[in-house]
Length: 198
Image 1: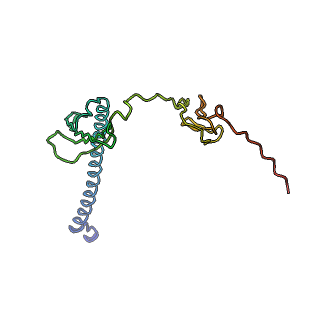
Image 2: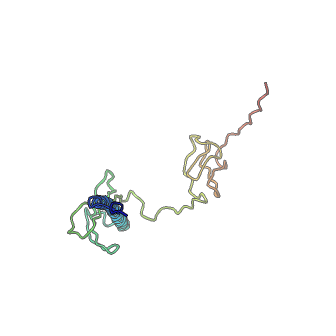
Image 3: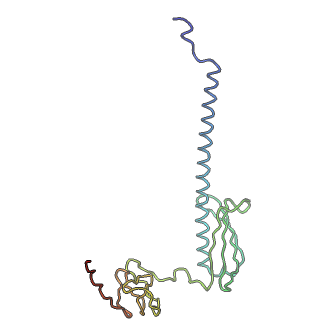
């Protein structure tokens, strides 16, 4: 064998190959780093959303806080430090306030933009938490309150949401939630005669 047939890669070819591999690995590291950063941000945002909703629930259950204009505090949640800032704003309804909670990562000394801002309303114009009727939607137990004096709807077309029959009240079946013409005045329908062949 001649020495020419055993010729391998030159130094320039090896350097070019290494440079291509390095560029590919760098792009892969950037992609992995971006995915990890996005995952961490979404985790923090989810935790902050839970904190904000928990605090809004606490505010609604403690009606005495409605007299305040602001409150802030720090807390430990998911083995991390967080702080929130709550503001109470007047609305066009004198008995109702708008409550805004902003949640930040870190303690109160940490500066930055809030991860989450949640809004709710509080006041005597709203029902107290837990005061609504327990409705079993599978049985259609919603009380019928619609007024059918205008004659809206069709016979038997009432639903648990308050459908009405002509000139009557809502037609609600206690078992299926689908209306039946049991109340109000119904209009009898006349069958149409079959078409005569031509």
